[in-house]
Structure formats: structure tokens, C-alpha cells
Length: 123
Image (cartoon, rainbow, N blue to C red; front, side, top):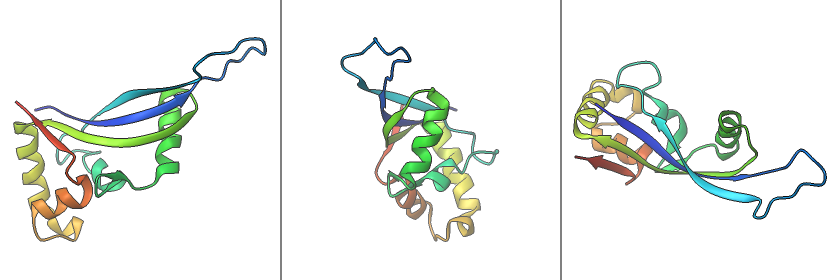
């Protein structure tokens, strides 16, 4: 069972020495965050941070990313939840058991509400 969230992160290098410069000073990279197992602490990451396939609080998430990476972050964009079939099955089972938590009537309503269409199943 394996899944991870994928984000596009644009960050900036700011040299600490006055006579040092970098060109370019901004870069984009992919950030991967492991998805916690359904039902365990942290599994509601998608509910707490995403809305319709977008980050729901850009400033907050950018600050968290800066803390994690140790560089000034210009922007963060959610790209996908990459998952294998086993994790997806477990996630759907956990969502189904907790539909009231999401104020929803179906698993597909929940996944669309939070992940949008950014769910990629790997074989």
C-alpha cells in the first residue's frame, strides 16, 4: 500500500554573502509528501489542505513548505495524489465509513470535493 501527494514548488535562493549572486534565482521542483495510511493519524491531510484539487490556504501551505525545505518559497501548487490500487481501496473504505465527517453522501463526492480530478492510480 503506497501513496503520495505531489506538489509543484517554486522557490528562491537568497545568498547570505553580499558579493554572491545566483542566476537564475528562482527554481521549480516537485515535492512529494507520503500519504498517511487511511484511518491513521494524518490521513485527513487531503481534507485539511485541499479543495477541488487546489490548496485551500496558499499562504499557510507556502509557510509550511518553507519550514520543510529551508528556503523562501514563492508558490506551491497541488498536482496529484499518486496511489496504488491497494491504498485507494483502503482510502475509499475509510471515507465510506466516515461520510459524515465530510458532509457527503458518497465516496466519489468526497474525492471530487477535495482532490478534484487529480488522483492518479499506479499499477
